[in-house]
Length: 248
Image (cartoon, rainbow, N blue to C red):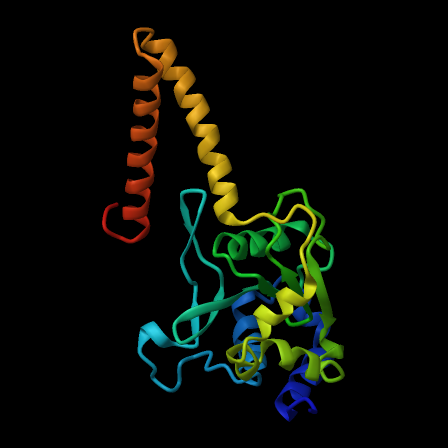
């Protein structure tokens, strides 16, 4: 399948004005409106909800909310099918070096890993990077860690079939991202959010037990275990209530 004419037009426009776009003065919002939105519209996504679909079932949510480390973070785009998240896209301005800068890669991977999304995208239109987000991100990871695909804007026409087979709405609806993740196999040090959370809770349990025992030497082992578990259960319950908007 050849790249649509509007995609070819976008790449020609970017090439003609690349110096201006790569200047720090050209910001992320302009990049999103002028290049990223139409690029993904060409892939079949209703980026601006021109169809008037109800909020719960919109194709694309801008500034979606994800809980990370107790804080609400906002990936630039969340692409969905039937209201279910399929992948995040984090946008940057073209002056950012996505190939080598570790911070945008960590940001995207952290969002997607926390949301249990196997694949997500980082782009400034000039560059597009596809990440396998099943591997727990580490802040010091090089930008190439877990990066499966990397395209430059002048490759979009040549690689359009490959891009569309993975990220077009039609392909995603048919399960392209899940199949892609399965085809990549298991990665070294692969971890799930649930496993990491369990690991973290076990750390809380140990530190809390030590503190309670030091402050309450009269507690039996049974009483200590009960107090630790009850405290952790209550904290987790309250955090779930906060996440669901039941309690602040």
